[in-house]
Amino acid sequence: MPEARLGVIGGSGLYQIEGLSDVKEVRVKTPFGDPSDAIVLGTLEGERVAFLPRHGRGHRISPTEIPVRANIYALKSLGVERIISVSAVGSLKEKLPPLDLVIPDQLLDRTRSRVGSFFGGGIVVHVAFADPFCPVLSQALHQACQGEGVGVHKGGTLVVMEGPLFSTRAESFLYRSWGADIIGMTALPEAKLAREAEICYATLASVTDYDCWHQEHASVSIEMVIANLQKNVERAKRVLRKLIGAIPRERDCPCPTALKDAIITDPKLIPAQKRQELALLIGKYLPQEG
Picture 1 (cartoon, rainbow, N blue to C red):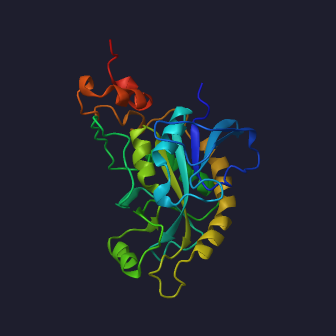
Picture 2 (picture 1 turned 90 degrees about the horizontal axis):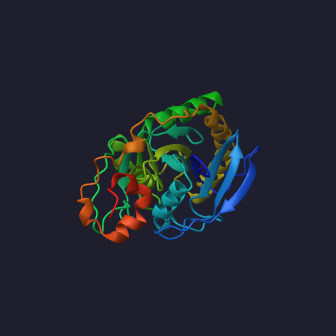
Picture 3 (picture 1 turned 180 degrees about the vertical axis):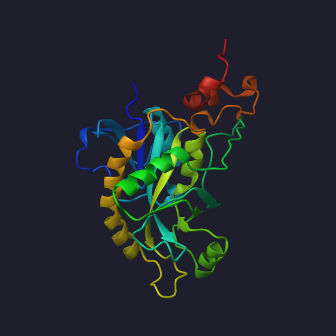
């Protein structure tokens, strides 16, 4: 039996939701090291949910240092089939003011120092990533937001920058010229690794500021980000409770079969160590040895 089918990656306070019961913490070992922190398992609205604080409790892990492969692998090992990512973003458009929520449907990768795949080292896998967010889960998330009456925008392009510094003004204007909508630091490689793990992935992005392009608003500061993010935490909790009842039981989307026909390497040539450490992800697609 899976420990949980729904995973939530976000701030360390997200799991302090009214109505969460049967709470326990688990520490999961993975071939990719330790996750960001212990994973909190609990029952919410009759469903088991796994909560993982992305930056560790006390916000001690920078965006570049997040052990994303360990995080996704750990959730997969607990039986998680869907992940909701809750994160802070800056707005690149006037129509997306601070404190609104956005459910993006596209990504632009501007990261430089992150490992973006489980594969390599003797196994080559090319996974389709044209639509980086699960459309079914994103739609359910949008409906949950509407059901709670919060300001939400469905669709949009999220630029993921390396960080930890915020954008220069020139970068901010460049991303606006590309037609991007919001900017953040954590959706990648999370979305890529979730797809490789055949987990549905959607983002609930909390707008905290106008980045630094808006001349009539103060440039982004960490104080502004934290203050506005805290205001959105309670809304995010309400949305998550509403979401659980809106998620279809069956996964009728391409995510559960993302690796089908994507493993290019001849199975006989995949190193034994890789077969072993990636069995959770690729075992069902490889012929049994012996």
